[in-house]
Image (cartoon, rainbow, N blue to C red; front, side, top):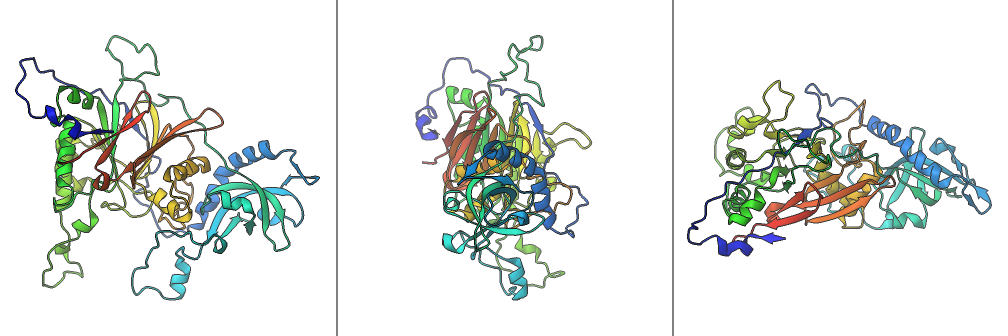
Length: 490
C-alpha cells in the first residue's frame, strides 16, 4: 500500500533545471453492457414470485449437469441415488437428489406479511445487523413450483446458504418429513469468455498491429467507493481534495506523476453523496407547499461532487455507479443517477442518440462491462451487505465467491433486498463469468482469486468506503494485480 506521506519529501523542493516531461494517459478500451437497464415504462404492479421460478428455470440445467456428473452411480448403504424432478416427488426411505431454490426461515428476518397483518406501520422497522441467530432456530427449506421441503443434517452447519440460491441436494426423507441431506452441489462458475471478446486492444502505433492480442496498453484502473460528499468539510473534505490532486498528478513528484498517468479510468462504486447531510438544513418555520418542505433538501453535497467530477473529467474517463445513499431508485437494479444532478460534468456524458459511451458514463448498480478486454462485474455493496445478514461468517470475499458459484449476483432479491419484479427474465443470474468482480462500500479492502472447473479465473475485490478508510484500489489491466493507495492528511 502506497501512502502520500511516503513521498512528502518531494512535495516541497527547489525547481529542477531538467525539462518537464508531459505525462499522457493511455486510452481506455471500454464497452458497457445494458444487462441491468430497465425500460422507462416499467411497472411495479406485477407479483414477485415469478422471479424465483425464472431463476430456477435458468440455473437448473447447470446444477443438474454438475449433480449428474458427481452423483451418477453413487451408492449409499447399498442403495443407488436416483434423480427426482420435483421436490414433492421425494419419498421417505429412498435415496434421491433434487434441484430447488433455498428459502431461509429466520426469526430475525423481516416479514412483510406479518407487518401487514399486525398493522406495524407506526414507525419504521428496526433492521437487525444480522438475521442469523441461533442455528437451531433457523429453518432451511428447498422449494420449486411443486412445493417445499425442509432440509436437515449436520452438513448444513458447514455450508453457507441464503434465500434465493439454486442448489442440488442428495439425501433421504426421514420420519419427520425432512430431507436428511448427505451432499450438496452448486452450479459453479459459468462459462468465461476470452479477453477482448467484445472489443479490440488499442494499437500501440497507428500503423502497427498489436503483436499479441492478449497485451493491451499496460494501463491501470482506479476504483473508489463511499466518497460521501457532504455539506461540511469537517469529516474528510481535506482527503477528498488530496484524492483529486492525486488523480490529477498535482500532489506528486515526477515519478509519482508517471505512475498516476497510467490510470486510464476511474470507477466510482456508489455512495458518493452523504444522504444524511443532504437532508440536513436548519429548521425553518413556515407552511409546507403540497405537504413537501423544499428547504429540507441541501443541494451542496451534490454540487461539491459535480465540481469534483468536472475537474477530473478533462483528464480521465469516469464510470459512476449509484449506491444506497445516492439520489437514485432504492430497488435493485439501481438505474443511473440522472444527468440533472451534474450540471457541469454532464457535458462529458454520452451524446444523445450515440451508441458510444461518453467520457462520463453514469451506469446501473449492478454494472457489467468489458474494460481493457476484461469482463468486469461490480456492485455498490448492497448485495453483499444483505447476504452478510444471513450467515454467521464475516468473510465477505467468501460471500462474493459463493455468489459466483451460485451464478447469482443478488440471490436475496426480492426477499430481503428490494428489487424490481421481473417477469420475463432474471438479470441477476450470472450468465457470463467475469474476470474481475468488485463490491464497493465494504468495511475493509480484500482480494482473492478463485478458479472454476473449466479454467475460469476470477479476481474478487472488496473496495472499502473512502470516507472510512481513505483508500482507493488500483488494478493493473495486464495482470489484474491489485494494490491500494491511502490518502492521509497530516
